[in-house]
Image (cartoon, rainbow, N blue to C red; front, side):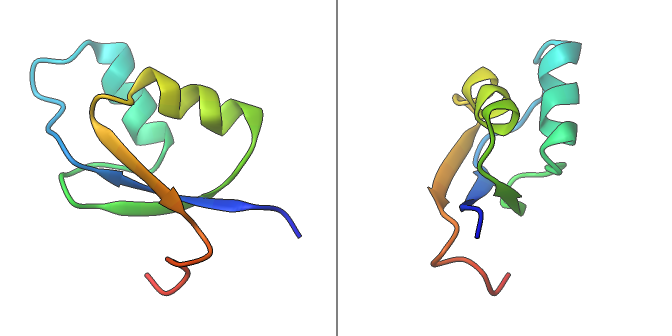
Length: 66
């Protein structure tokens, strides 16, 4: 079974670069407080690293019931 991670947007993307906004959209995040449970892959981890100042990452095992 693949590992899951939960990503929560904690800060606004207002004033951010267009690429940062597109990365948030790719993670399935649109507004502050929105959560997304994703597969832990190299691509996903790279996207999270790009927007690490706007999101919080949690272990997906505890956040299955969104």
